[in-house]
Image (cartoon, rainbow, N blue to C red; front, top):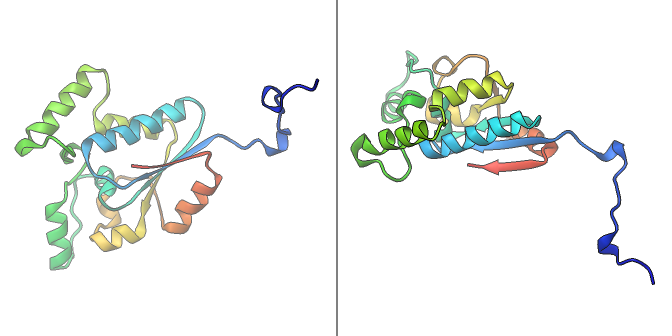
Length: 173
């Protein structure tokens, strides 16, 4: 009697095996979600995967360097005033409590051996994680390139789709 098909293993030819890679859309600007995105990204990079983080809308706040671009219109200044000026200032998604929640979350992460968001960003950069800022989101939210950290890429939907098409895993955070 022949073996059941489920117990037989077949291997793919080497030509069909692709590089292991991950794309993560970083849409949220919440501290806990940003922390999760960077922990996943650095973990995947440590496993030898190629990682691309695509920052859009509120996720762009993680890339801010704290500076403000001059020459913005009133609406762009107003939006910029309402948004955090960098990763040290992003709120928590659940327990904000007038700013106490993010402090508690940061203390819990520090106690658990997880670095701060700026440390996680530096760790991801050291592991050659690709950072791409969505240029359309930047335009809509009035964020200028001069407000973001150095050495990141800029792109739109086509950049993201190209990276996602080649990825084995695609996450939206």
